Length: 604
Image (cartoon, rainbow, N blue to C red):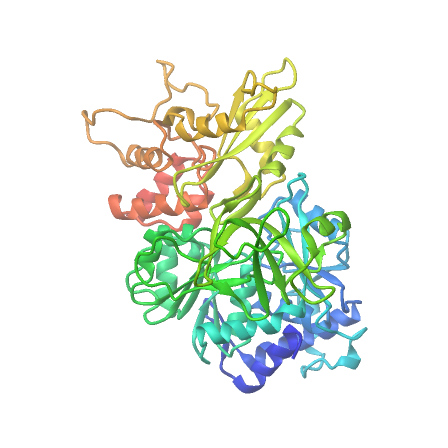
C-alpha cells in the first residue's frame, strides 16, 4: 500500500460498521464513511480533480470534513486546508499562490471570493447528485491519471520569513512509514478512541486523522469551543473516553491531568515539553514527546515513554524510514555529542515549497550520508545526540519562534506592520514567561507627521494575519534603539518587552470615561471599600490574567492583549473563583467585559 486511500480502504474493509468518526451526537461507521467518500470522489473526478490537482477545503470540524478530505485523496487529488476563521486576504493568497483548481465548502462557511470554481457539498442539489453515484471504491482506471506515492497529498502554508506565507508540498511517500511508526509505538487497537484536537490548517491534524482511520480506531471530533485547553478540553476527553491524544505543551499546561487517558497514551508536540509537564503527565499514562516540522510528513522522531522527572526531555529517535543528522556548518556529523543543526531525511521529506524553486533549493539539500540522489531538510533547529543515541532539541539558529505551539516567522509579522502607510519601521519580539503566556509584542515608529495608534496598527495586522500572529501589544516609539553599527537593537527591545511593568504591556488607546479623567473600572488597590460588583470582579480577573493594572468594563478582552489560551484561563478562573460557568463562545463573542458580565449574571 502506498497512498492514504489504500490504507483507509484496507482499514474500512476489516472494520465494517465499527465507528470511524464521532462528532457530537453523530456516529459514522467505517463502511458508511467509505461509501460517502467514494460518492463524493466520483463527483470530484467529474469536476476535473486528478493526481497532483490541489483542492481547497473550507469545511468546519465535523464528520463532513473527514468525508471531504478522503474524497479528495480517493480522486487522486491533494487537499489545501483553509481555516474559515483566517482573514479573507490570507485565504485568497493561499488559493491563488497554490493554483488550486477547485474549492469545497459547506453552506455555513461565509463565501470568500477565491477565484476558482467551488462546490458547496451540503447544498441539497449537490447532495442529491452525490447520492446517485456508485459507493464502491474508486478504481485506478476511473482516475484521470495514475496515482502513486510520489503524487501530492496535501499542501500546508506556514509563516514566511520574507513576509509571504509559503506552501509546503507533501506527497504520499511518507505515509507507509508514518502508519508503521504509529502501530509500533502506540499499539493502537481497533475501537480505541483518538482525539482530533489540532486545527485543520496544521499537519498535526493529519496525524490525528491517520492515527485513528488507518488503524480501525475511532476519531473523536468536537466543536472548537469544546477543545479549548482547561476544563472544556478535559470534559470533552472524559465524556468521550479518549484513549490517545496529541496535544501541545501550552494545552497541557492549563489542563488538569487527573483521570485523563487512564492507561492510554499522550503525545506532547509542537513545542518544548518541560520537565514539570513531563513529571505531571507521565503519571497514569504513557507520555511521548514528538518532533518534526511541517516540511516532513508530520514528524521525524519520537521519544518515550517518558518516566518521571528528567534533566531534559528528549525528542527520542527517528521514525521508521527516517534519519536525523546533527551537523556542523560544514555538514560534518557531530557524533561526539556536540551541538549542531538538525538535518532531516527519509521517506517523509516534502517535495519542497510549492512554486518556490529557489527557496526549495536552499532548504532541501543533497544528503551526503544517504543513497545517491537522496535529500535532507535543513530544519533551522539546533540539537545534540547523546551517547545513547537519544536526540535533544536545544533551540533555533534563526528568528523563527513558537507562539503557543504555532510556528511564526517574526519577519512576516514585521512586513505586515510595515505595510501600514503610517508605519516606517516595525520590530516584533516574543514575550511571555511560559507557553501559556507567550505573545508577540511589536514596536513601531511613524513614517510621517501623522500620529498612529496601537489600535489601528493591530487592526491592520488582524486583517491579514491569523490570530496567533497578531501582536498582543503594539508600542509606538519615537525612534528605535540602535547598536553602534546603526542596526536596530532587537535584543534591547526583547528585554524591554520581557521586563516592562504591567501598565506598559498593553496600550489600549482608550479615552477617559469618568469626570476625573480616569477610566471607570478595575484599578489595583488595597481592597478596601464596598463589596465589588460582578462586573468589577470580572475586570479584576482580567487584569490579573493579562498582568495589567487597569481594566474597564468597556474594554474588549482580546483588544487588551488576550488570546485563545488566556481566554481559557479566564473562563477557568471565572468558574473556580466566582462560581460562574459560561460557554467559551460567549468569552470570544462578547464585545466588552460589561457584556460578558451580563452573560455571567444570567448564568448564575
